[in-house]
Structures are given as C-alpha cells and as structure tokens.
Length: 103
Image (cartoon, rainbow, N blue to C red):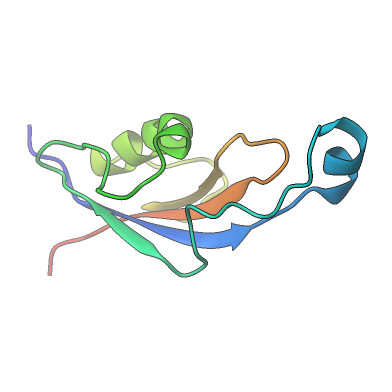
C-alpha cells in the first residue's frame, strides 16, 4: 500500500523555565536540533524518518505521521492536519504534521 507523503514543520521550540529551575541539574536552552520553520518531508513509500530529524522526536510523532499518510484524521484537527510534539519535558518542540495531497 502506497501512502501519501507527509510534511512536518517545526512550529515552536519551547523552554519550560520553571521546570528547568526546579528539576534540571544544569542550565538548558531550547532544542538545538530544530529551528522554527524547518520542514521535513516523509515519503509515503516507506514512512521512514527524514534525514536530519531527531530520533527522539520521531519516536513521539511517528504515529501521527503514519495515521495521516494512510488517510486518517484526528478529532479536533482539520482534515489531513494535526499538531504534535516531542516529549522533552524541559524543551519540547511543537510540530505541524500535514498530509500532502498530490495535485
């Protein structure tokens, strides 16, 4: 089954400063692996992690990518789109995930 391609866009890189102050052993900065506006394309042929993408974030958002690639949608999100994030409690990254509809 060939699935649709999916675009992942970095929307925000956050730093949860109160959590860092209370729980982190060191100073932290927002994630350095991603930049806001950065885009990645996931091939519908293999649904593999795009080159340069963080493997930890991929583990967190992969299920959203697969669902959209296979034609699914999410309650509360526009069809073919959703927002997901990595689970780094100190410096989460928020991603837009969108099915690419062929023209």
